[in-house]
Image (cartoon, rainbow, N blue to C red):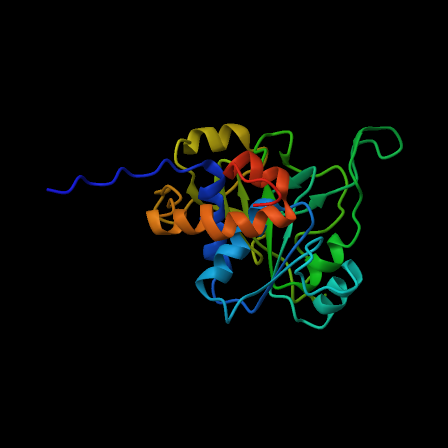
Length: 253
């Protein structure tokens, strides 16, 4: 009799990597910023599943397709040649507005962030923008942002091919309804609860139509092997600190 293999322990980061990868399936070109290791890992995972279909470009990577950095990224977005991108912010509100500037009075802020850079440009042009925030709290997910760096929705008479698709955090995954300008809770990550999500979210959100909120699926053993093997090794080239912390890999791995 063979001894059954134990189910590997799944790290919280790996739950998010699998969930994000599912939202990238079938896309032609996924672009990732220079400070987005979990989205980057998800893009690599998607690429490993369909290497001839999904092109992955990561700013800061020696293997990316951007010879001119962010300038080329913005140009490709303007041409409609990027299918998915990721945005984060110091604050994100219930209408998917993103704040990358400051908290409090703009002239005397309580905190300042790096700045908007090209966030609004990408938000308007990339069809599938996935918002990402590891810290899910009322401090970060607010009823209304203090400064709009990139608006989640636009008036009906504004041509806008791009916009928010989803918001994923360390607690859960939301879908975004652009017509209603509201988030809907799709799933709660294992180890967390709907009550916790409600308690830690500063904006109102919808539930699935049947009122039942499932858990976010965890990656199976084969997927974990891919994440911890080839995906982690590729990630270490761009995000060595993250790879060392999460996957015990150094920059030379």
